[in-house]
Amino acid sequence: MSNSKKMTLDITEAEPQRVDTKEERATTKASESFVDKLKHKCRSLAAPNAVPSGEYFGTPGAGDSRLISIVSAFLFIAIWAIATEGGFIKPIFLPSPFDVVERLIDITVDGFAGGTLFEHLNASLIRIFGAFFLACLIGIPLGITIGCNRIFRGIFDPLIEFYRPLPPLAYLPLIIIWLGIDESSKITLIFLAMLSPIVLSARSGVTSVRIEQIQVAYSMGATPWQVITQVIARGSMPDIMNGMRIAIGFGWTTLVAAEMVAAERGIGFMVLNASEFLVTDVVIAGIIVIGIIAYCFDMLMRYLERKLIPWKGCN
Amino acid sequence: MNTLKVCEVSVIYPGSEGGESVTALSDVNLTMKQGDLVVALGASGCGKTTLLNLIAGFISPSKGYLTLGESLVEGYPRVLCGKDIGDEVTGPDADRGVVFQKHALLPWLNVIENTEFGLKLQGVDKTVRRERAAEYLKLVGLEEFHQHKVYQLSGGMQQRVGIARALTNDPKMLLLDEPLGALDALTRESLQELLLDVWRKTNKMMFFITHSVDEALLLATKLVVMSPRPGRITHQFDLNFNQQFLDCRDARQVKSTPEFIAMREQVLSIIHGDELATA
Ligand SMILES: Nc1ncnc2c1ncn2[C@@H]1O[C@H](COP(=O)(O)OP(=O)(O)O)[C@@H](O)[C@H]1O
Ligand SMILES: [Mg+2]
Image 1: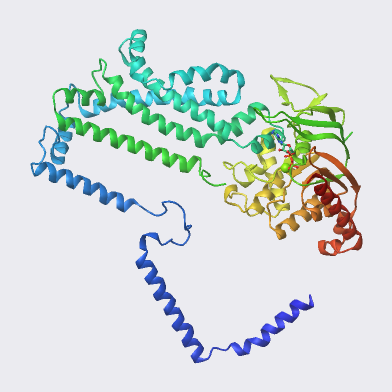
Image 2: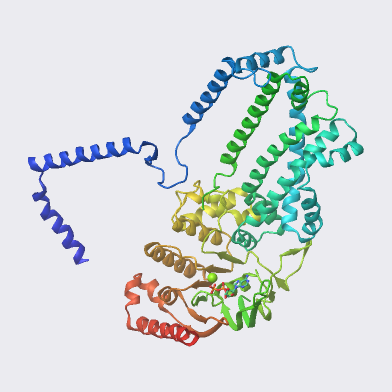
């Protein structure tokens, strides 16, 4: 007590001595500008590596990369344009980007292979998102149940582990024998390809839920059902969303396989049809459309992740 | 009625695939009554958490038994296959609140939602549970943080939320597993005082785990010293330093009394004696 009093006294006593003399002010100013200069030098030398305030030094890959992405995309297209317009590559192998854009407009308006771009796209999107919806609807509860229940795990583990590594094309014939060649067999094929990553991610999500969270819930009077629905299901969401992103990727891969068989519409069908007749610009236009849609979906998933599981990566 | 009895309890963890089985607790006896603040002290690995898990109903004893009031405590879900198993056996339940060292908050809920979670599970009306939760958040000094995300709080604040959450549920008994172990000295002292205040006001049973001798002596009405391999209770002391602390509100003063220093020496020599014996 007496100690701290003395200290405050000391400070008040010392105060008058700290009146800024002219020299002193000058030196502080000089040193400030010196620091500024140094800082400036550092920034200009190590511009991409300087850590903006509010971020940690040492975070792998920290910093904004959007501008770089835009530049690199433009560069890529420019090289493509030069290589094709300059006559270095024959259009049958690689048409120029301008031709592709023209063709894209063309198939949007007039259509190709018995339908406009939107009709093809519509058919494919219904298949892929229909299958995705079903896979989530069944896969997420199934994965959580497998993770939580010994009996379900015993029953479904071998089944899923057996069919998971099979390429969808290997069991496509069987599905056609069972379901015919209409929409249901296509959706089933895509659904099966998507199911296993979703089930497995939900299952591993369950094991990643902290036991402390579960125990605390029980000791606040939770029933097992409440623990599953209000703790485990929520806690495994980061893994589940990861699985959903992987699943959509599998979906696009399988879509083309599904549309190889007796389809009359579909973006995969359109591309395959074009390749049979060596209409390379339609092939590339189709690929670009698929790429853009897949990218948009991924952006949507990332947005949902930020909204639904903002704690991901925090402790 | 509100008595916890641990009778001749042993816990043996089966060794996983080729590993030897571990005797985490061996022949432990302990009695806790209403208003007891039992502190378990011991080096890590001496079975403190195992003992807490037994009391909470997270595990079952391999030998011996525990009773809380009239019911047997076992590692059971409260509702088995949709049928209530009645009062004779109890697993983890709302009458024993748990506070862990960390990682027990639910990151998808904000501070007040975490705090009211227990009442929500029990179907308490939203306005009622909000009010109760707010009351306890105020008690732990977080009245201005209701809407904050728990994963953005400091460690000390997270522990406050954990304590407020356990209290909001109004359990008969509070089980705390090194709740202040990860905190800085200042936060630790203020939370020790807070817990003692709550204990005195509510007269709850508390079972508090620590490996800090000072903390143990300051808080306990009954100190349980444990030693490892196999985990067992070697000494029990009845203490009243917490009464002194609550009267004078100065931890340093209590800790510098000759009685406290003598007690600390005694406990330290027990702990170090053990280390020499097992080394
Ligand atoms: N689930 C488990 N499986 C096997 N051994 C365990 C398990 N939990 C704890 N143990 C062992 O039991 C002993 C006591 O552990 P614990 O109760 O956590 O001690 P403390 O909390 O005092 O540090 C330790 O040797 C530990 O390795
Ligand atoms: Mg422990």
